[in-house]
Image (cartoon, rainbow, N blue to C red):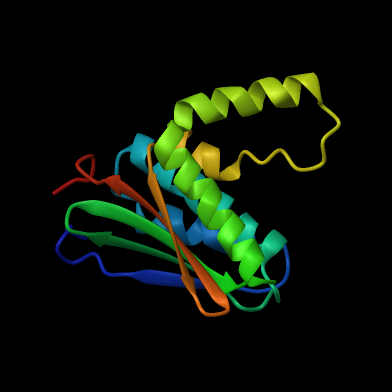
Amino acid sequence: MSQAERSKRSVPLGDAWEELQRVRATIEEYFATSSEDLRSAATMAALELAENVIKHGADRGSGLVTMAEENGEIVISTQNRVRSLQAAQTVRQRIERIAEKGARELYVLRMVEIMQQPDANDSGLGLLRVAYEGSFQLSCEILGDRVRIQARRQSNALPS
């Protein structure tokens, strides 16, 4: 499939962790002709974002993971209902902080914190991994009782 023919693909998320296997299979198929680096980064980003939907969404059946290619960029997005407007604003603030401070700096700081307190239940690394390890730019949009998170990365590694 050429870049021009590649269309958007979505995976609805149910309420079980097993849903992540469907996300993995869909994204690996979608990026099957891409470089290993891009396929790995896209898979990691999609799984991290989908995991956040399952863990933090208001009701587990309301999530959606979408992958697309737009204007030379890979776009992986999630959308789901939120528990509260405050929770959505907290996510948006975290993403804005990553953009302001830089993913690398915050990633390293969080890794040091985890080493100092290894018993913490939630590592809080998901968005940082997407931004730093995957080289994606993150954005967050609050849409009433829903939140949409987008991860964008140049697709110049895709075959033509």
